[in-house]
Image (tube, rainbow, N blue to C red; front, side, top):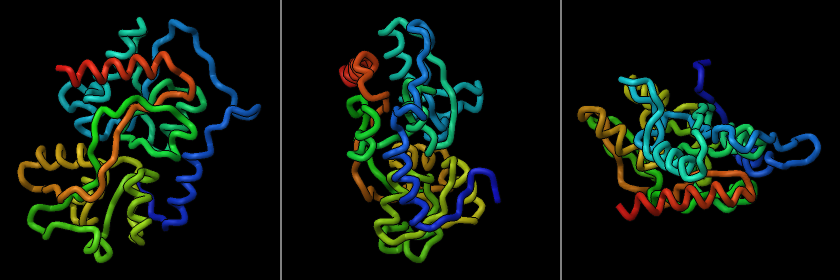
Length: 243
């Protein structure tokens, strides 16, 4: 099986959803990992969702809108920022367990996720759309039943496809799905519009973005009750909007 590629049914997606919603308890078997107050703030991301957070090919550094917001928030608190990478289903559990202070990778704010983590104010309101080869017909949710649809494992787009009875091909990293789209191994990728539009723009005309299928708010996740970090993130987002 190709690294990062997951073939599974909607039952598995539901299981991942329940894990993300309920696997963050702080009972005796899951203690909060405390770090020194002056230690760097840890941001965890997949680093594969341009322009939000991604690895710059020239410098090798992880950059993007979410990274800029996190750095500004850390600076407000007088802390350095450390960036770590993980697969998408691991992001929120890492915040809950104290392995990270923040999680950001095009994470949408949902009622289920708010049961286990807090979020910054939304830094963007976007949604889900299809990425497809420009020479092909534009996918729609109706046509998607006849297509090989790729998406990010355990993402809201994964659950949305399941809700429409579309059994997708799930990936741990969205850029692996994009490579398989280019290679003809999948027909389309359903993912957040920020990333889809950027990837299409960077493809030199080979890929295109569909119309918007859903509308959602994007935020940066923090541990429940971390009011200081949430406030710093909210201030950083407000400052970007003011500019």
